[in-house]
Each structure stands twice: as structure tokens, then as C-alpha cells.
Image 1 (cartoon, one colour):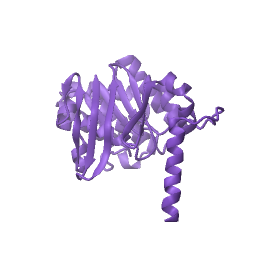
Image 2 (cartoon, rainbow, N blue to C red; image 1 turned 180 degrees about the horizontal axis):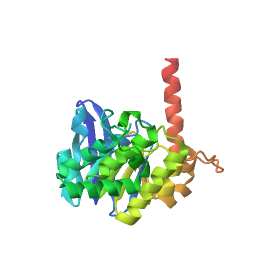
Image 3 (tube, helix red, strand yellow; image 1 turned 60 degrees about the vertical axis):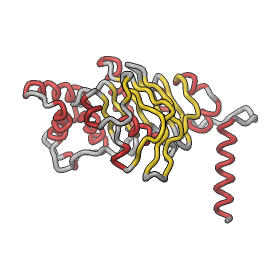
Image 4 (cartoon, rainbow, N blue to C red; image 1 turned 90 degrees about the horizontal axis):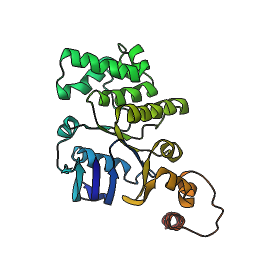
Length: 269
């Protein structure tokens, strides 16, 4: 469904964000992007959704294929019409619009009839009962969890076949995070929606994802099934908080030691 091939990207023609990222999202799958802040997860999602230009960024090398067609230079609205939507980090809602008005805004790209709009709203309300209860409330006065549900619900109003989620768990209580990921899994299993999600909570992401990629410094360091990554000692140590029993170093361990040494040198200098 989605394929990034050797994608390089920069901001302001100076700041290098991606250095040859390659990954794939199969139809009906959940794929996770793991990595620390600044690893390139958000830039990867924006490259896939055509939103790099909104922050003076651009793809300089490589290609993005959506359903086999080159979408590297496609306009975001055209990709939304084609079924690819991005939910940005930070739960970007229209605070002075009601919950229902926010949801309606997500459907306008397809110009639905009144009956189609009513059907779309009811389907989102079935997925997110909390939104139905708060549908007349101003979005700015809802909780963080409700705003995250609203951001996802608004994207679903455009009827995506591929949904990109940027840090869906950030700043939310564990119970709400579990609820959101259960909804993601339900959308995958019942409606066939595919997902590419960037997530710092590696334990949670690997539990729900089929495949995952680990990004570091704008590059894919590891890729594989969630089971394969969960079993790797270096991933356990760096992302799952598990202490290695094997005293031998892995490439990840060496990279981490190098980063620590570089930071220490910068402080002393």
C-alpha cells in the first residue's frame, strides 16, 4: 500500500531530516516507527503524506509510492482524497468549533451529501462514544484523551484506507492510551484500515503492530516483525528497558556509547 524507497529529506535546504529511509506498509497491517525524539519519525510521516512543504521541507532523493504510484510530489489534499490521512502530533483540533463541527470538517474534502455525512458521523460515534456524548461541546474544553479521539475521528471522516498517526499516546493516561490502541486494532481488523504510527512507547507499539522499524538519526537501523524486534536484545535494552544478560556489545550499544562520549566531550569543551 505504501512504500518509501531511499527517501532523503531536508528542511530549509540545510537541516537533514531523513537519510535514505526505506519501509513498506502492507494492506491491512499496522506498522510502527520507533525511535527517540529527533530520530526522524515525524519527518517520515510528513514525507509520506506530502506535508513536508508546510514546514519548508522537501524530499531531495528517493521516492514515495502509494498504491504503486509515485506520490512524492503529490498535494496533501489529493492524498487525502485517495485515502491517505495523517493525524499530527499534539491533537490539532479547532478549539472554538464544537466536537461535531470538527468531525464535519474532516469530511468536507469529499463533499458528502447530508445523508452520507450523517452516516459518517454515526460510524465515528460508534467508534468513540465519548465524542457522541460531547458532540456539542467546544473542542478546546474537552480532555486530552477526548481531543486525541477527536483528531483520529476527524481523519476517519475522510474514509482513509491508510492512516498515519504521530505519537498517539503522548501526554495521555495509560488507560486512555490502551483504549485508543484498541480502537486502532479494531479499525484494522473490522474495517481493513492500515496504519503507520510513530510511537516512543515501544512496548505498547510492538504489542499492537504487525511490523516495526527502528529509526535513528534519520535512518532505519532495524526492521522486522514485532515478534522479531521484541526478541532482539539490543531493542530490549534501548527501547524496552530490559538489561542485557550478554556482556557482548551490539551495534546499538556501541552507538549509544558513542553518543554518550560525544555528549561528554561537548560538555567538557
